[in-house]
Amino acid sequence: MTSHNDRSVIRYGIAELYGQIFAELTAEEIRELAKSPFKSQPCPFRGGPCNKKGGVCSLRLYEKSGDFGIPFSDEVVTMCPNRFLENGIVFSWIGKELLSIDTPIVLRELPFLVSKEGAKEKAVGKIDMVLVDTRKDHLSWCALEMQAVYFSGKGMASDFRVMKNWRDEGIPFPQEQRRPDFRSSGPKRLMPQLQVKVPTIARWGRKTAVVVDLPFWNA
Image 1 (tube, one colour):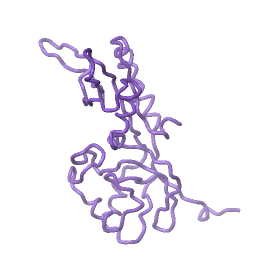
Image 2 (spheres, one colour; image 1 turned 90 degrees about the vertical axis):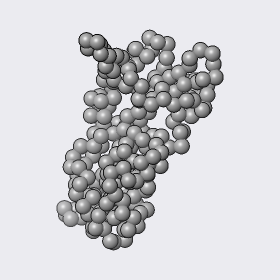
Image 3 (cartoon, helix red, strand yellow; image 1 turned 120 degrees about the vertical axis):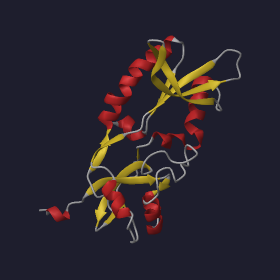
Image 4 (cartoon, helix red, strand yellow; image 1 turned 30 degrees about the vertical axis):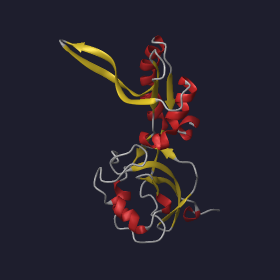
């Protein structure tokens, strides 16, 4: 019979922090990044400072070994939509597939559907990205929506408390149970937006691309 102490303890923890692979960081780097003030670290994917509090790009599973975390799986779950922007690969591929151009102009967060309240106009939503081909006489464009994954469970505060004082080799094991919440990310968040945006954009004769990561897609 396997005792409780013999069972593997597996939890989700940080996979990438400010664009860096967490499992490859030194103790000094972990402390430095954990103590970084908001917007003080660069984001290697979007350019400019990281605009996500804490700087966690993605999560992965770790197995407990003493106080340390050992990567349990290579699967990484994207928690920040800026992670999708690496090297413009998404824009290039979608531009080529939908617009026949691999260097489209990228417009971000365009107002979508305007409601009138008295004399004022107010956008009721935004399109994440619009890709435009400016080579043609007529306007050629497509919409792009990106959805990262939310997580449920305890927040990351306890992990960061440990990280700020970490001095051992290796990386600390995640302090709390948490998991990707694909239900909140998909049916509750992404789908309602697509149900409004996609039909309207289609009536304009345009296509919509949607970017999610592989674990989200497989869920």
